[in-house]
Length: 493
Image: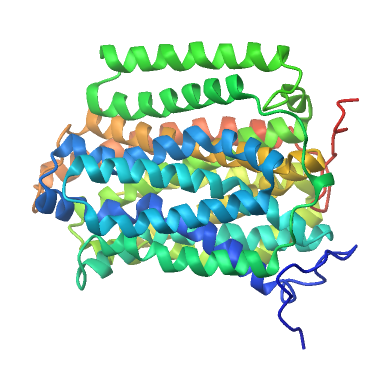
């Protein structure tokens, strides 16, 4: 029988021999990932309640969710760079402590401005956690198959949190005040903190980089990603031709160009751009953007579909997403078999075909009942499971051993860009094709028909876009039949 590890267990040459042997650190890392992901969607279902309670207008309520995504997405690369220098376990423990402490502050919130500020700070703390939870999985196992299975568990738990957020929030609101949706993060963070402290080996100097922190690069990356995320939000809120949206896009482009120029000149860059010469790194990041684009667009579109067009309650609409969670669990053997049988490149191409096919199926079947939609959910999730797991493993494993956190941060940043883009695209097209303001109460038959028409065009367009992006990324992967990709020389040689 396996006994609990000591507070600072030595790392054996073979790492943990099985997932069961690593249950304490793996459960802790999964909890950390779960709380990051569920916080993305947990409050979305409570926005009307929050607006009535603290008097926030429509714009303020949009920023209650947008502030979290903005700081979270903007700081991922910076947090990953810090972790590779200061220590991954150390930064994760600090992030969990800050995240839990800030969550308790929800009981002190009295205005929309205070809540927006709190959500932005929570996004900062989550950014310090997200890339490290994935990279630390690679510290637990040296066996490639175990790494892939562990990453599968992480992704299933994280995506379950993302999908279950509205359901959990809607159910909780029937019994408690909305503040408790944030306060509950504190005990979860505490448990995760204890598990990481007990089960994850301490950082070893040889696993870290001694390069100085690239502060200009960090500032430029935060500016580029932050402005890009804001531009997507602003485009939906103010219009794509508005001055503030165009200024944000221009600022993001300028910051991105300056970031690339600086990283190429820097002796110790935050993100060594030479890594993108590796097809696995480049292809995995691109495929993750396509995957998250598909997932976010479908989830956002179907939340509107179930609650507005069908008139379902938040709880029932949340339950309607269960095919995604069930398939996430059930598709694990299929996704692993695809990787073993066909290799990374072909398996990811099959996954990309599932994504594009499910979007095309939704374009055809949005007005044909829930059974058709559920079937498309299943096909989409098979694609999600296959592409996300293989690409996460391929991208991180293709990094030098002292850059795994920045690799995980790049993986998460790609997913955040895809998620933001997917939500913005669906929101914009629905506003353009249907109505800029979704009415409360029962919809008229004419409005429902118009909404279905808008969905058909939106999903058909996304099917083409996702096919090009995800398949293009998959072509950059290797033919490896395990979870191992080519690892570049840390010296750049």
